[in-house]
Length: 177
Image (cartoon, rainbow, N blue to C red; front, side, top):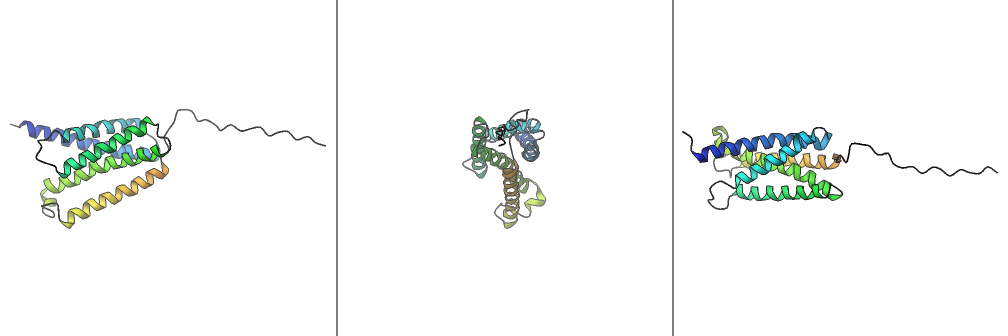
């Protein structure tokens, strides 16, 4: 009834949509630090699998989808490097930017696929070169840039379970004379 490519496409699409939803949760943790373990690791796993499965489709030449996949993979590698350096210094910004960019790539592809596969949207941009498509993708980009800037300003990685109070030197006693 279903051929292998159709089943694989359904699997890849479902995986990508799950990654996108988890990605929104992971971005929320950049602002409130709650649920980071619940969203971040599953997001990274599903988005990595989504990228990998995207490269498994029959190769018909270099396409925007392949370019997006390569860029998304590079971003994920940078995020892993940021983790290795424990999100210290500029690596914190790399991590935040990478998280937001990873979700952006998922959303970018979702919008592009929606214009290709949903007849009502396809009527407005049948080739993907129309202004309607460019405007939709530009709005998505601007929203994610705003989210990224806000997240970079507020994100502070959780470094442990205890809060360490700063050491305060006792004041030297003054002699009264």
